Image (tube, rainbow, N blue to C red):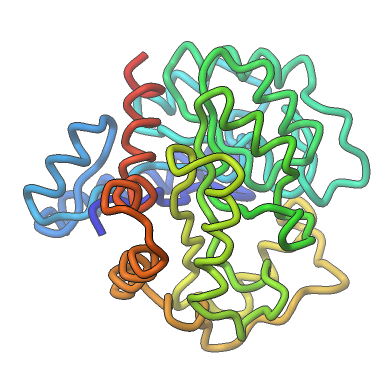
Length: 296
């Protein structure tokens, strides 16, 4: 794997996120032969040449900025390149996909969208509510991403996205990463690679191969307690009902870890995808989107 969108914030605040970045800076020195920071597309290309893995700092929740938009510039300077508007629930910017009511972006959220446009931070809408998703796409000056979700019209789950949102995302030049997380498929942790390829196919048929990519949502080696924390309200209030996850954790069958990426490539080629379109889905579409957004 040449580069990963490494989640460094979910239910985290300003100080804890700074501590995580500080820890990564130490790791970049300690494991220099294996990993490197990514701030530009050239950094990803260099990682490929160096046989290292590029680490893209990504947030699954904009909460670390609190109510201070100036912190976006600070975190951008520290290397944050992808920020999800909300994570499952409401924050100061908007509403998540599990929130009781979604009334779209707040005034603060609209201002944050414009500031991320100015800085060149890619906005992610994977865990975001339907109206907040549409608001973000419509109000962004550039393309945005749904880094890890599937089509709700294919698999009816609140974490998957509406056809309306997916089509508008593509019309505005964005990319959706087909999600390989088993919990969001009908057969859960019995889901296999062929079903994942079906999800990719469904999206490609909807918006074309230029707007679909891979969103693994890998949670390798995470214990049950990690998922209990993920499903807490604001990371504090325990959920009353948490979906099943195996322990030790396993991803979907046939795409269990990064070593199985070649199986995805082979599966697409076996489904008569051209070599050019296969390359787009496997990573070139992400590179094109990053280049467009990060260059600002």
